[in-house]
Image (cartoon, rainbow, N blue to C red; front, top):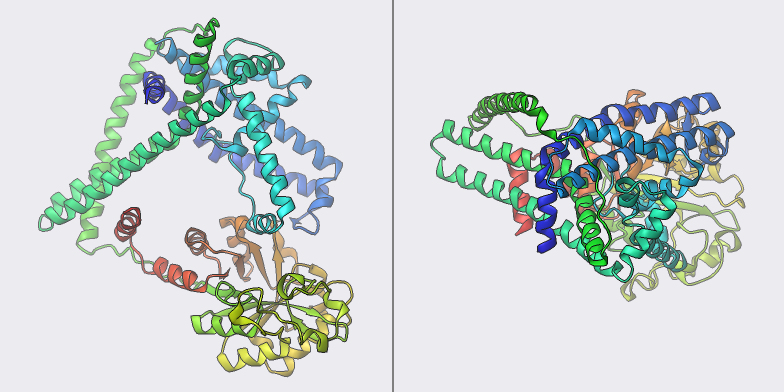
Length: 607
């Protein structure tokens, strides 16, 4: 706990300077930097002739000379922006170490000067540290402009299912972690002692030699303690609200006033934690940096700045403004809470656009995927749609299977185009899931369509071309058309040419373009009536743009409560999931939830 106390003292001494800088920096990031970056990307797309980006064209866009030059320039600016954030925080913490009040203007002036070190060819490794190592390993140190990038779910699933890739990725993470720990103190040497980055790395390696594992444990422990303190504040606030509701049940106005104070406490705790999360991370590194230098007998060289006391009048004005804001918030919050308790406001939410649930490859959590058992299970669970994958056999029959090879689900190492349907019908597609499903067969698309008609469930039929097909799209459309099912299904594919072929043969067929990457004006893709996008790439702007053209947006594959809730909040039309029950329950709860009950449910989960 000694290091935690040291960390607390470093942050406490200049807490207001840190908070003011970080809050301002984050506001600038979201209001200026992020829109500017997005605008630059769109400008590059326009100049290179791309209206949208998908998996099928992103490589050609990425290797365009103008794209390469532009993105290198953007990366350099992003690095400088993040470096300014880190440098300012480190200098403020250094002033705290000297027990001095930091003058924010002086600190930022020095930070801007030191960021000039980036614009040097020898500083490529510095850019690598800031852009990739710190955010990738995310020890609470990511700045406002660079945060940990979420790897799309389908890539994670692919890596987890491939042992060689999993080992390689694990090895890469271990290597990056080791490299970060070796370079952990290099920014302190560069910023505080004005060393070239190459020399700073060497000093960092020497300072942390033999202590890397211990340092990692210390940093994680300090971050854990800080997170627990924040969680404790939120829990106390929720418990107090519950207590106030029970004790002051008949004193509505007083109840509203007290509840407003507690809500403000929770909101303030969240704001402070968010604004100081990065400074807390670097405060932990600073504590270790100063301790190790003392242990080795190294001189602690700190920056000398003007004392920050000259801003007393400004601080007084800021306190007056803050006090006024608190009074206004209390008054408005009390009025709102009072009206809420009297029933004047209804926080129940019923979305005009209902989010439907699609069972991914049937009820694939409980049954072997893409089999009649999985489809029957999906219908029993109340799924609105069933998603299934189709391919063509050697003799031209349309079968339901995801992989081009039968090995994973049947144990037979042959490809779909190598076997006739008679041979495919003898394969066991259930034993891989469990002995109870031994003998389950790979169904024909025609069988599934008949089942869907009888059970009044819609189908999402994804065509997976292998290059060996003959009249693939025509045969699929004919199967659903002959059974009067064309208006109760969508024909989907990850290959845009497939959708163009479908529309050419049957313009009335509803098509969906399945995309793992969707950027720009994808609605220009005229052969797609709707779009199905990997959940990590679904944004509010994307949903609005698709809906603005009268089209629908599906999200795949969403298997967590938080992920499903996010899709509902973004107003997507269809959630494709392996867990139908979770999706149905989460969507229902989201449509009939209110503010207070959400916090009560959170408390119940904690306990």
